[in-house]
Amino acid sequence: MELFESHVYKNRRDRLQSKFNTGIALIPGNNESPMNYPANGYHFRQDSNFSYFFGLDLAGMAGVVDFDEGKQIIFGNDVDIEDIIWMGPQPMMKDLGEKVGITDTRPFGELEAYLKKATEAGRKVHYLPPYRHDNMILIHKLLGISFEEMKEKSSIELVKAVVDLRAIKDEHEIRELEKAADIGYKMHMAAFQMARPGIIEQEICGFMEGIAYQYGTGPSFPIILSIRGETLHNHYHGNTMQDGDMLVVDAGAQTNMYYASDFTRTMPVSGKFNSRQRDIYQIVVNANNRAFELVKPDVTYQSIHLEASKVIAQGLIDVGLMKGNADDAVAAGAHAMFFPHGLGHMMGLDVHDMEDLGENYVGYDDEVSRIDQFGTAYLRMGRRLKAGHVMTNEPGIYFIPALIEKWHKEAKFTEFIDFEKAKSYIGFGGIRLEDDLLVTETGGRYIGKRLPITVDEVEEAMKK
Image 1 (cartoon, rainbow, N blue to C red):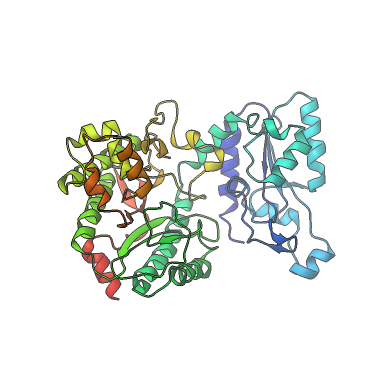
Image 2 (tube, helix red, strand yellow):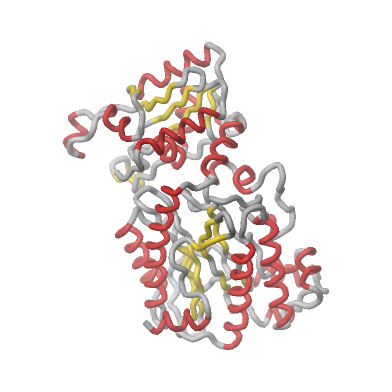
């Protein structure tokens, strides 16, 4: 089990405690999750909030920060002889607690009585929106909250406090994110070197997963790898690559402490872009680079998304797929037929950082609200940037047959879109280019070594 030094976790809990005057924060860890029968489980993945505040990467625990009494407690059981037979000798809870700055550890069975005493005294128990059914059952048992009301009655105050803390990455986290980026780099370079006609997508995907497990705890999300890149999250890996195809590879890794990377590259299966592919690819490169140039504190990521969208619109006007004025096209939302998603999302312990807490609390705030327009509405991260924010930068252009047909039939945005030319690109697929960025005091920087991205760099990487 890899851990930061104990003071890191203690400091996080103390900072959380400083945001509340009364009440209790209950942060359950995760349990083992069976794959198809109880003894055959998925790889254990600790809850990210428990990991952030309490560090321990073991199932069957819950953390409590008691704001009234100034207590910080881990509830969990010491192993018994049956556990030792299957798992070998394990540290006692007392010793585990000391590793993360906790001096008060108690058996898990005492949690119910602790919370019951607090609620009977009229004290509020704050909890975050649960996303696993076993923790929903636990909260129902401990607090008597119905499943229908569980999300509604979760603590908005605790959500906002946790987002405020986790959104700004410290130096320890940035080092872990760099490790995740190094693994992601290895994964993607393997794809550059393996992609060629006759290869089945699954062969590359499996090799990349192996790298993720070789250096960390596996992929940070199920790998997206497909020659049918017009489907944004395509997890089907059964296609055989052919000359003329482009392969979209969207993948990242988790470190042993669960910090994530998330990169996307698009490559010509033949090793060389044809002229049509090159023209569209260069537009996406330009949008990615422009977004990176604009990253700095006090600028909203929503405004950067819109600027990247204008680069895409202007590029598509230049090649004849769109027409009119790029600013007007983006304001109307016409560009979203080709770029129907957001520029990026926060990243950290989760690849979509803290998405379990609610996207609007993570990516937006009282100042910046989500724009209710197709495409731009899918922007997960729009808030004003601060030093320490980490997010992805992932513009793209896609030719989605059903969307082209729908908008054409509806005569939608005919003043901005050349539908006949757009239809001639059906079968082209899609292009997405994604980097991970850290906001610094003066601008932005890439996390990890930047993967090949220019036309020349990509073609050179594929030669190797």
